[in-house]
Length: 289
Image (cartoon, rainbow, N blue to C red; front, top):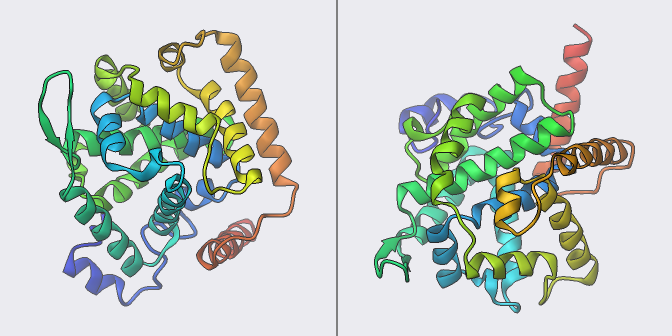
């Protein structure tokens, strides 16, 4: 596994075409270029919010809860994920260093125990990463983007993303089975808090500087994302965890993926447009033999 902070790794990679952590033949690029994955991003935020310490640390330190600043903060998060996924190694390195530096100076307070804790505590960072990747994995599989083999490959590739924010790769789930084991292990500590309720409210009725069409889009995506959560997580949000919801949501995701597949792609930043071109070229080369 490549550590972008390793000098020896950089020395080797300098002589290669710099496609960042993943590249056009990766499962990660193929998955993250799909518009349906916006649902997964919202799902990740809802799932991450169920860890009390992570949510309270975010509430106490983040602009996400300030209507005047929340949209800009949301945009920075989207930009970081885009850079981490599609950017060249130097940009990934800078973005990761900036996030690690920011996290290192922040503390949270647990009102239940009275304890103070680091925002960059390993268990918190790992939860945020795992909830994000498990969300992308779930939506990608249910929308028909991944089969069993490519799902395992996607989770294995995601370990590289975890390293960027300072997580020990030895602790990161690297297969679908390991991800399921991790999620089962942390589930007892997850619950709904007042901070999580407020975070969810901001997703379903976003306020502030975001344009109206963006606020409506976020609310719509969040509503679908809530339905994609595991049954136990939907119950924590006060919703019934019915199998019929799972079936209908999977059908909706497949329909949404089909619909977005026949529509023109929304123009993106230069690195996204280049990634689209490279993935198309890679697919064409593979099909031609």
